[in-house]
Length: 356
Length: 81
Picture 1 (spheres, each protein chain N blue to C red):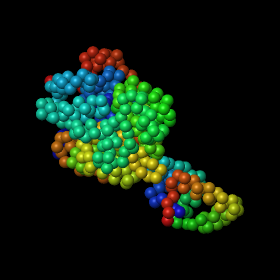
Picture 2: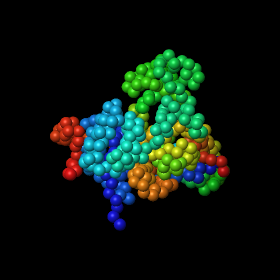
Picture 3: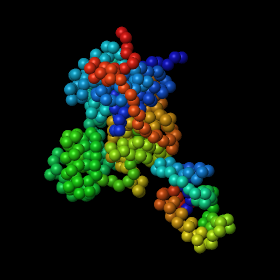
Picture 4: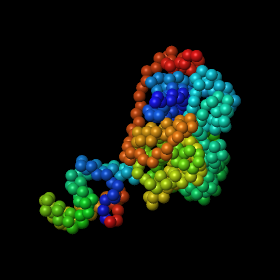
């Protein structure tokens, strides 16, 4: 029996030093055993490397920035859909997720594009700013945190949590402050880049461990692979990592999916203390950039997501290879000015344009 | 004390701890000791073996053994029997 062929749109093609998950997701989709694909890249910037990786991305279209509004995004997707007939769309940028969650019903009904995304309420509740309350609600251990809008709020929070304090941006970036002065510096540095609020979180000492996982929205964990970062860049991103054997982490993840009924992909960032206690420090509502490690160790989460979106039966994945490592590398592509011009001027590019 | 059951130990003396992702390299004597620990040998057996096999006295062997066990404990590679 021949495999179905799906057109899948993927964003997050910024395979840079703080990489988006797009390229690893595409790699996973290209290796899917249950279907074949045409990959449509969705980009925001002409310098996203994935735009020029024609062996992985068939054709790319530029999208308006999320700040342009949902209607403009919808119109752009309508234009693209008139050409491409996209079956499934996998957004991979934190900043765009809200728009896609809001539009997911319309994308399906008006354009026939399927998505697998968390519910808006779940997405909002697990925000860094709300994570502490969310943890309490679902009986998930989270370090206490407080949202602030001004440096004048720091002393009161510091008196409560003590130093060091973790200072976090709304979407990205975090720093550890060992004094009030350092906390103020981090506040200004992060808020200048990502805006307010800033989140102050109690510092929990331990080892950072992570899980990439997929939930079906009904309390079932479709797959999960735990990993520890072995090499970390100055931006805190994993440059190498290894899969772990840790039933406690897996139980933590199972509980989270059962309790929250999380739908779609996510990355759980956790701290394991010396005593073995696990604290969730962040829930990223998308695949992580290291998701290909899950594929390499036996669980193809992006493939499972597409099958879920297409209404195919997806069996939960229980096993994976322990001690499987990934080591990231950088690679200089040579790009013709013509190709750069194509995406910059026309907002679309690629070697495999669809002819109507 | 014995080596945790899930610790992977290769013939080259490479140790992988799947719970933490940590890895370590042992020298040949460390590898011998770890294999003996893994097979359930106790301290007095291992010390006697070391004194019989290598040019060392019981006092030195015991000091080195205790240091080694201290290191294994520090890296959380041991568990209660």
